[in-house]
Length: 307
Image (cartoon, rainbow, N blue to C red; front, side, top):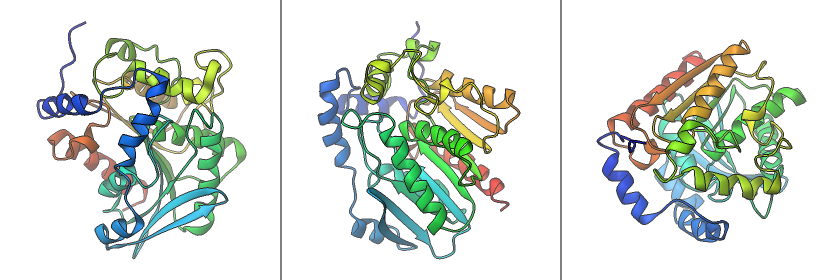
């Protein structure tokens, strides 16, 4: 195929990042990826100093740690699940800070769960940890409750929306899915065509799913709560916002998921960002396309919350 065309502001960024952090190619590279990601973690004191408008704390839902950032006047809650391919990263990493960049204007409390990682803890450990944290959040943080997440966190948020629907609560106002990781099969045209390009390609994606599902990955024995693209019924879900880069592995599975929500009678807003690679808005935050992506999320959140 023709090499992917990245946005002009993003192309030099991805070249530099690939030199520093190449995509995963083997399961035994997971510990090294965790060490790289751990450098992004902030202490509670550093978070409090950086975000003085928020009261910062770490709470627990049983064994699950929760980062909680509360503004002085909160109009709702964004329960935000961190990414990391199901194998890396933390609730104290970059993701929660990214969420503040586009949830701060609507004055949302942000809660981020520190779920267990694969392959040491396979499905359903991460999902059940996220569910426990969500129940704690619904009990302790008043206001409309929006699920959110990026990459693997977006996939877990989508799975959590299905789980909550089927278990009968807590009530959700919406789901905000940023470049979500939805399909363990990784067999769409974008997954195949962009393998070897970007920061999270098909090879890395299959490693993440294999770590999470083991030998079940790619078989008929994968439930929707593990890989939301497997869900036969997408009805009865809260309004969804989905966005994805046009030149990344997850493009086609995200577009298909939005289309299937519409077909089931649901509400979904979909953005496919031309020239965007996976995670572009957090890795190149000053690019015009990144600012536009964050603005679209803020607009959707304000509309959802009646602001």
